[in-house]
Length: 249
Image 1 (cartoon, helix red, strand yellow):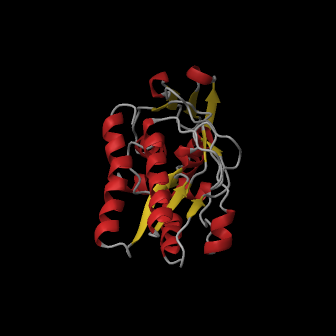
Image 2 (cartoon, one colour):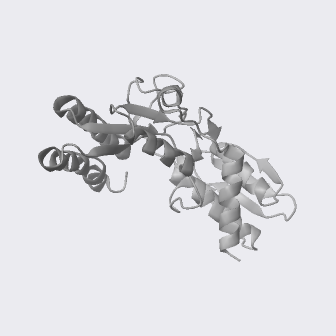
C-alpha cells in the first residue's frame, strides 16, 4: 500500500461506501460483511486488542480499512442495515498470496528444501503477529452474518508470534535445523544439515512505519458467536510449508 496509496484508498475505502450506498438504495435487507483488519490498530494502544481498542493505523492500507470500518458502522447505525465488520487478525493458508510474508517464507523454504540455493530475504524479524488459519476465520465470518443483530467482532487466536519463530516452525516442518547468527540487519539463518544460508535480512523490506505487536482478544466472538480458532501456529506453518514443498514435486 506504500507503493500505491491512492489505489489502496479506492479499493479498501471508497469501494465500501459505494457498496453500502447501493445496498441502502436497492436492497437494504441485504446482510453485508466488511473485511476489517488488525492493521487498523497500528501503533497499538493496548495489548491485546479488542473491538473497543483505539485505532492508530500505520500504513495507507490500515488508514483505508479504518474508513471502511467506520463507514460500515455508520450505515448500520444510521439506516438500520445488517452490516457487520470482522476485525480479523492475520489469517493464512496455502492459498495466501505470494506477496505476504508467511507465504514468502514457506515458498522460499520449500524451494531450498528442493535443492535451491537462494536464501529468503526478510525485513524486521522482531515484528509479531497473531496468525491463524483462514478456514477457521471464514467460519467466523459466516457466524457473524447469522446473528439477528449486526455487530463488530475481533477474530484472532490470542497468541502472538515473531516472524523469526514462524520461519523456524516452517523450516522445522521441512526437516531443517537452523543456526541463527547476528541481529537486526545482520541476522542470518543457516541449515546445519546442508550448510546452506536459508535466511538473511534485507533492510529494503523494512516498513516506513512499523507495526511491531498485534495480538487480538477474541472473547466477544467466543461468547456471542461460539467461535474460536482451532489450528495452532506450528500446525499452520507446517501445513503451508508442506503444501509449497509438494507443489514443487
